[in-house]
Length: 329
Image 1 (cartoon, rainbow, N blue to C red):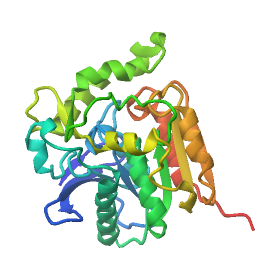
Image 2 (cartoon, rainbow, N blue to C red; image 1 turned 90 degrees about the horizontal axis):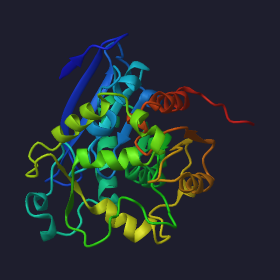
Image 3 (cartoon, rainbow, N blue to C red; image 1 turned 90 degrees about the vertical axis):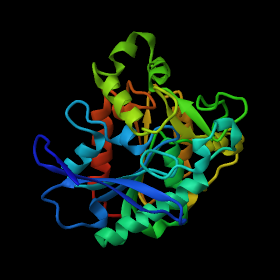
């Protein structure tokens, strides 16, 4: 266990491996909380799921501008956990990822990731002796979170879907076309152009504050230290297969109408990967949520949690988690 000092209260940080849903899979969990948080509750427990390409440490725990997203959540009093599905970050990598990508079929689709995420939530609830948890998923991770919520509503307190993948009548940027191998090879440096390119030309230079991208790229490469590809990480291709089999052919992989906990959907103005109309279509289908909210952050892209306007997203998430809404009689 390591401890990191932050501006107002020391953060206790831990990374651990737990058993996955099958015997040959181990899952990495990252946990952060304030050192003075000694009692745990469902309302103050949050479990997060990463997207299709970058693991939890890359998306949620890069300390830029003084703190990571996980640091901010922990400072707000939450016992916050982030999960790596198999094939990502510090979790077990399928043996096919040690061979050439073209030698295997797409690995780790959303159904597999839901199994991993469910095993992690079960562990956390046992470990903290809480009956439920809040859940946050980003992009493809929102698919995983939505699937989990639709099948295991009793385990959820609230659900947060950040730039959530959903049905699209147009092609999605994550799918470049062509045959899919077991995994993709992703260069953070090459990704920068696509990241900034989603913003209007005059806003691209200021989208990511000075030094933030370099810190993020370094942290991202560190999530795959055994990558045989210099300057690049490996990302399972199952999420792209999901796009082809579900999201661009009007075949949703889960039914939002079965989700019956409060839901926040967080969108971003310049998100070309999950456009606002896509997020809105998902939002209107959440008909069983006791209450729900759709928030669009201005001047942000699909990577809003690592951009200059990220604090607006942080505040929206924490405000939603903090509030205690009494249903009308």
